[in-house]
Length: 162
Length: 254
Image (tube, rainbow over all chains, first blue to last red; front, side, top):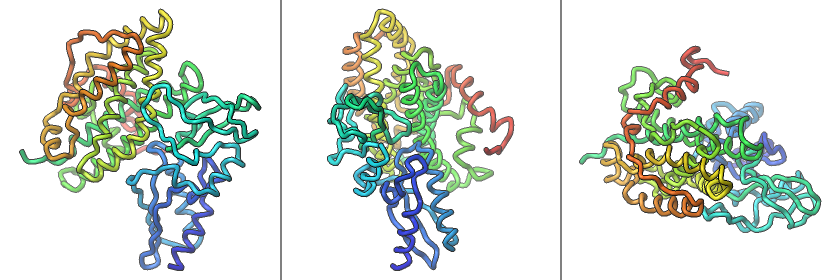
């Protein structure tokens, strides 16, 4: 029990290479930590199927635990239940806003196939205005879409509900 | 009928995702505007990610049956099989053409994948992949539907190009709903999706979007064979490029 606690605290040090303010715990991708005869097993779930950051995150988890003296580290990937932005921590959402990325909406509005329908207004992380426009549903990474603020005129990323 | 091992079926799904993902990736750096270049590259990544889950699963199944002389990996399945081993539908291998043809191909296939993944599977691994992929495919479907409408119901030029693209692609849509042998027995066991059940849903969505796009469905003679490894010449060109590095420099990594 104590040992898994230590591992959880070490995982706080592993960050998303694309969004370095978020730890893997903030992201909600750590689904479990187990210890077997002193060797840790970390269960993780991918955010998006093709997210190139996942390989790097696996490697960084391994490196961090190795540096703290753990050996024979097992990292298991599970797909179900599928990752959702609901699992992102509240602390993580605050960190996102401070970093200039609009966090996922508190009431999740996941994509549905309806035509030309859009989520409710997303607040600009810089000036707080809701007077914003979607530029593209696909942003600089799979997990974000691109918006523009019509008041402060800055473009910004929105970490979309998933 | 006794359910077969789902290897052929899993490869069919993996090949569909990889081949379309690769086709889309050919646009990376060449999209009409930056945002849409990024959008299509994102869709390519999702599809290649889905293909990886499926190839990893197929490789595990192949290693368990023990017929293979060497250990099968996802890379061997993607890079070292030839055209006749690929089980993808003919639709996904068709050349990109212009932007209109690319988004139309994406729309026809995303609509199929959307209803397909919604069905899930009694196979736990396939069910998990379907659950994960459905979230991504929903975005692909909305994005591609809107592009088909925007271009079909756009200018005279964009409309005529979309009509031409539909003429070129429609003949490959029939195969989506023609079950191969390996699908029929697995569908009875609840492992493969019952294609007859999702066909009317696909048709409804496609008709809705094409009507909105003011496009006319042509009376094409339907083509088939991809699921059995009989492909159009397009796949050979795609594999020649995609597999070049592993063929020329076996086991190379970077």
